[in-house]
Image (cartoon, rainbow, N blue to C red; front, side, top):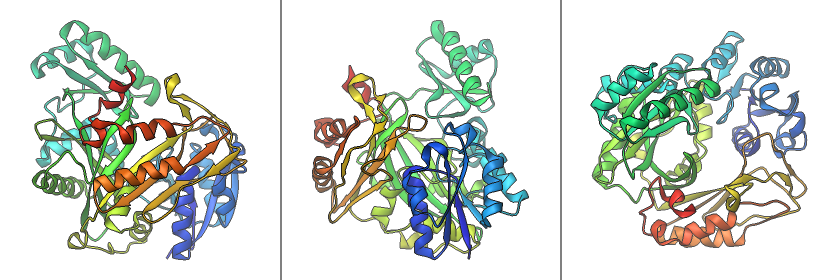
Length: 446
């Protein structure tokens, strides 16, 4: 049993981990930037320590300060949450060098699956279906153009170290390929310090469906079902739900099977997500693996009755999974809406500022993960997501109605949010019929 866990994150995920620690009788340490001195996670933790100025590079991305804080506070382990250092193998190695347990996969596995072209090659070798494209990384535009012609247009150009939509471009033809390749490569170099690219056939009008897996150090790997994350803007997810209305039971079973195979292939431990794209014809392909807990993990918790954060901590302590594959019997339907401090009418421009009033929805089957409160000032330095509203009901129509009710009840004043925008989606015929693909939001904004 860990005595004390330091949470190397902020906002609602830090609050979520602190609560899991409390439920396990483990003391928690919050790190915070000067900008976050009055944040909820700082107030809820058993102990707290400031690690730098507001910008993330001076605080939440400063590995040495976080390691020093953990040692000074006597923490046995570090939970990275999502974002920031959660998929940074160098940070994992620093934790190991200092005798601190990193609650997540091994550094070598993060390296193998974090590099998307290497992950793609690994999955090809394992027999997991991938989108037709390159097996080896590409660096030169002219070489890549020849490969693109063989794959067939349209072609997706992707950064090997990419994430959040950065370093991704679609080339519709040979004439525009070189320009799009150079733009994507430049974005990748600027964002990730890596100009390694790969190519794959662009699947038009796909659904984005991911499988949650959990694995321990005793060889057990369990798939906890899928989440449909197709409603997204600029490759940033807005709504997630489970089960997916886009796949059949047969496809679902195959995706779970391949997700387990993918995890076993790389000797994965802890929580991870295997992401697939699904074509309109029902063909599915491995896209990438996220080697951390996901923002949308609560959706899976609602339909499976599990606590994935507690399971992460148990696995990191060397314990076997508390459930088997046969124990996972998803029930009902869950939907999550991400509430962001932004203005949809102004191209989703961020809207930081002082929150003057908050009322959160509640009731049977309604969950809100958040770190906001009346009087809290949303900083401009960090991601604009301020809350996640999650509902659970016996079926999808009931879940839709419950989400409409929850969003209608939710009140946040003092700043602009996407609450009304999310409510409109919950009433849109395309979404209500379960037919929204990854281009849905763009079609709404035209």
